[in-house]
Length: 385
Image (tube, rainbow, N blue to C red; front, side, top):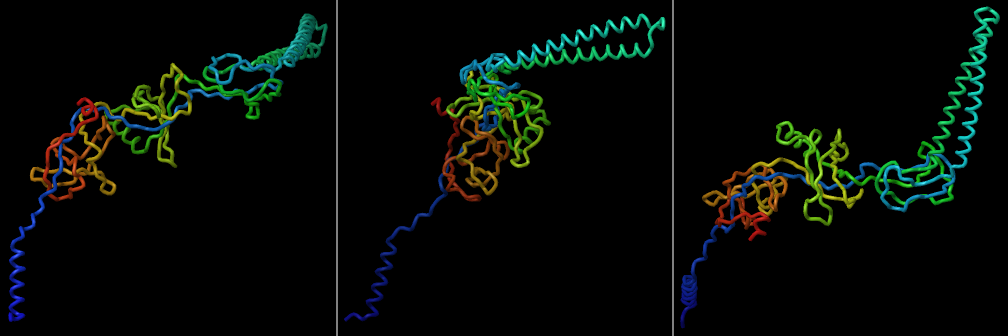
């Protein structure tokens, strides 16, 4: 019989021979990635903001005199011109008041004529001392009182005439009118305070404003560019802007800046800006949201890369750059807006840098990769193929 020790030796030898027959495990090489140089071309940079259209003028139409409403001369929502008749308040009480004021003026003028005649008569007798000086002074005082009464009566006539004119309420501006808030036959309360009856509202439409808020960082950047002479401040120059609506894809509506606020909002850290746009077809209306594009920097040479080549490293943005030996290094970059589907890189890259555009998940700082040449294309170039 074969001893147990001999059998164990044979088994060990057999296992060793089997192991020697297996090929060695392959050694993994550097991961393949696609690299390309940034697109270098002149660009005009634009910043984008979300905002809302506002009327240049908006007027609450209120009555200035009280009375019963007798006429409404417009259709809800129609376009009106400045001076168009909107409402009529019963004018009869004010016509009577005007007639009374005219009668009072006539009485005052009669008293004035009598006072002037008495004064002239006594003035002729004063040199001969036929009348006392006191009588002359009394007649002079009556003449002055009569003159003052005439002035007061004339003011009453003008006031009554003005009140009568206020019974016809006209549009103070041109634009689109809202719905009426009161019907014929109702009592309208007039006055120069907020308690006066609100009859309707009129908003102007052409031109129309677009209001938006910019961050403090953007405000500081604009000021730096203005100091360098690169971009004029929108306070001094009507910088061009474009806007598109929620259902639009093209920036076809052109306007210009016309206002930058004098302080930042301490609660939001933003500053209000405003642009103005023509609205000849009256398509735009106050309250509509839009996306505004504001000139950030005039045409200048720039480097552009796809957003997919950008990584976030805590608070920084970085790109993976591969040298000629295939070694990877992360470079922090300062980014600008998206232009033609590519992101503008303001700082951090050189034109000859080869950045990873595909396989970014396989790279590590200081690691080695197998780079394959690729090409970065803009949306325009891709569409042209």
